[in-house]
Amino acid sequence: DAGVIQSPRHEVTEMGQEVTLRCKPISGHNSLFWYRQTMMRGLELLIYFNNNVPIDDSGMPEDRFSAKMPNASFSTLKIQPSEPRDSAVYFCASRELAGGDTQYFGPGTRLTVL
Amino acid sequence: AQSVTQLSSHVSVSEGALVLLRCNYSSSVPPYLFWYVQYPNQGLQLLLKYTTGATLVKGINGFEAEFKKSETSFHLTKPSAHMSDAAEYFCAVSDYGQNFVFGPGTRLSVLP
Figure 1 (cartoon, rainbow over the protein chains, first blue to last red):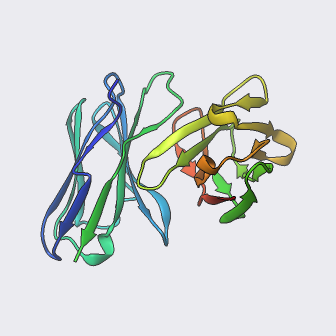
Figure 2 (figure 1 turned 90 degrees about the vertical axis):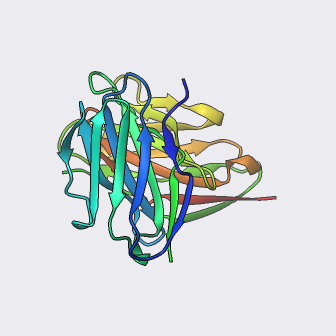
């Protein structure tokens, strides 16, 4: 299995620009998580989906952040407009909803907003 | 509600010495407990997990952890540290695999 795939691996953008991060979960996994990791705040859960439906988005920092999961094999996290404080590593993770007790992480996207 | 405490943000050991990384948790239901490792510029990789059954669990790379309900702890150990063990280690608690809460992480340095 290819594992969780994230793209791009690195993104550098200017303040005010729109940023879209992409994630492909492990085949057969129907629960997907987006996390943000910074030195100051550690690993934070932003949002998670079960069967493509957002279950808990209470971790999304503000309205500039949005996430979608149009099908079982693809999810996006969008930031519009981006700000320097959004600079972080964004991780996607997936697991099997029924009986799956472990989250598997992607390699992350390192976002730098100038 | 669940929470995880990793009191040490940084631990240094000499190569060949015992590694002990501490994790305490709180959970209102029987917990599932996990240790993940993160190498520089990589994602989190599962080291080991406890769900039910034997309280001493063995993971990859010679690591093991013991679930102690009375102490609400799940400390990670390795008898002999190797230079390649230098990484960030995260403890996590979950309620039956649903909601995951991660600790702040402990950075392990291994000195030659």
